[in-house]
Length: 466
Ligand SMILES: Nc1ncnc2c1ncn2[C@@H]1O[C@H](COP(=O)(O)OP(=O)(O)OP(=O)(O)O)[C@@H](O)[C@H]1O
Ligand SMILES: [Mg+2]
Image (tube, rainbow, N blue to C red; front, top):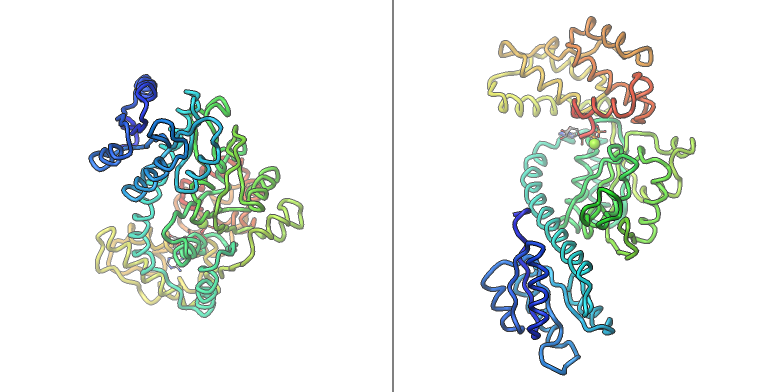
């Protein structure tokens, strides 16, 4: 459907207008249905699906009030509220256009129109409608995933119960929430829960990994761009803020935004206004921000690497996720839940823990927290030869591993001591470096002797930061 020929409904009482529009759209390879009045327009929408309706505001010669058009607009919205409507107004009647926008028109163009502007308005409406449909699909899918995950979400320890209490209190407000916690403690899951427990649950939850956006495309990615804004901008594109309009925007790994970009973000947060790159039209967005980081943001502020005023915008409420080692009660519960999940997934029903296994899992420090526990169990399930998993099945590293002295030597030491494959050792090193750097990608990369992109590639490979 995304690449299907766009189909446009044209409603105008003047034959030459309809004909000119038909030829223009045809030259772009688009399909259209021209009709000459409101009744015919409604009839057409009842019969077939359109991507955009382009409607005139006046249908009787010599009228200029626009009432007929506004009525048609209202009827169309009632009939098919997902259909974007663009209104055509006579030159100099901008107040009518404003009125139409207030009644739900997506955009307007003035007659006589400029072909290029008309096409760009239509392309824009198509993109918005498509994004809207995608969001709805995603949230329907998320609802299914959520039901699954909500069941599996384990929080029995006192510290996690307290955290969920706080979450229940703050989620329904529109307050911006900053989630702090080590790698793999469940920040992503909590962010999603905040959205679901909020009044915005029906709208989009848009996630952006701030560490993963190259600086050069930051603005285009966040704020969108118009066609021709730069060499590769072949068409208009809406940004993450617009995509999250009415819903929540989850800025993950927030500490990784370079200073120059922090200033740009701050401006949008301060006035809720933005411009797409290459456009001077100011757009208003209504977005609830949830951000997360495993870095020590206060420390980053003290070092001058993170703007204090930005931090104050983000942390209206702060949620601190405790590391897994401080919520011992949850370890056996999580381990058991993960064992059940992976045993089913890999058809290893009947697998169970030896008592020594649960003791060892509870005693381990879990630098990679819940995610590391889940991976350890998945791996153990995959490698299991019998029906009982004992402590040795999890390859728990005996103690903290030194990083910063050369990743290769450390990996060699780790493979030898803990009986890991090189890949498993590399994964552990990457995780530990991230924990020790407090989530600071640059410092972790330096400690491992890797470049930032090289570290990102490994994080991606091992699913760190998903
Ligand atoms: N309390 C929990 N109960 C069950 N599963 C959990 C819980 N917390 C986290 N998980 C699972 O552990 C994994 C890691 O969680 P998540 O990705 O939310 O962590 P994170 O803090 O965002 O990590 P990172 O700092 O690496 O981005 C996910 O697969 C998640 O579903
Ligand atoms: Mg995360």
